[in-house]
Length: 324
Ligand SMILES: Cc1cc2nc3c(=O)[nH]c(=O)nc-3n(C[C@H](O)[C@H](O)[C@H](O)COP(=O)(O)OP(=O)(O)OC[C@H]3O[C@@H](n4cnc5c(N)ncnc54)[C@H](O)[C@@H]3O)c2cc1C
Image 1 (tube, rainbow, N blue to C red):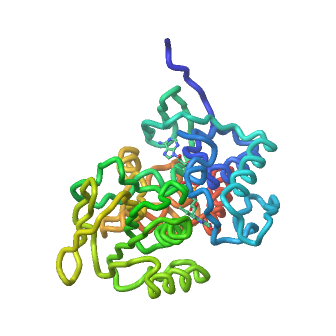
Image 2: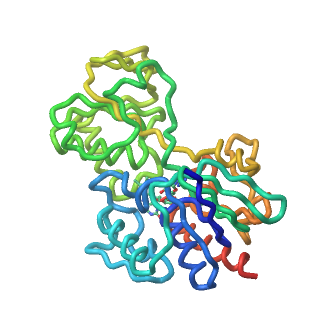
């Protein structure tokens, strides 16, 4: 069967909140567009932990001033999925789900070609809004590929009564450790630094600090995971290696954007280790004319820099530039 060819003025890669924000702006300006999303709608959010609460209040997650009504000031995952789904359906956003962009061939000035698992698109503008949640920061240690190991956390019930290690000390790791402990898991945290991460939500921090101090959750500080075996793990501490019994390992050490994808398009990355993609902060256009970046991807390895709250403005900057 022949691969279909489609033409749009704009192709948006990634159907996360920021990709949707770009589509809403494009609609207003009458720019023909399509969003291509490799998973379900707001795929990253869909894979966040079941009981997560956003650190932002709901109005800070709003797109295009469309009211986000939540039961509490800070919404949960279900409410966010409902909100972004309603916006997409009510505004008839043109989005192709479960279709992965496999490559972008950048034309010299105009005429980019976007290749996907289902089609080929010809377009003059491309927005890359692919986020950072697909690729974990792997530890690269023996046993990391065992079936009891996960780099994503979903629900605490699974770990009830089980000896579970949580590696990391940021929000994701702390939330997982507390939830699993409260659902009857036997939790040990392994933390590289001498204390819990400084960016942990201010209302959660005292909870985890107190649980560790009272011994309800065990923690090794200044420590790193050295090896994962089927029934135990080896932890490197400043007093030497320690081996403890273990059933499950949650390695919640963060995620990174797909730098290989950006480089394959020809987008330059900073060479200072942060791999920040090159873009004009006033228009979000990259070093390739007609190719823009939006959302959390703009931070390179500094994935905490951009989030929904402060990157939703990218949509207007880009569409204003495209519509000039
Ligand atoms: C647990 C957690 C809690 C958070 N809480 C908050 C908060 O309270 N407030 C806040 O502002 N931010 C929060 N964030 C951050 C926020 O969720 C992200 O910044 C936000 O998702 C960024 O939106 P985005 O559209 O840039 O990227 P994403 O939401 O990651 O969307 C990118 C999309 O691109 C798709 N994609 C990737 N590659 C391809 C490809 N090759 N082809 C097609 N599609 C592709 C992905 O499937 C994904 O759906 C939180 C993050 C986490 C992990």
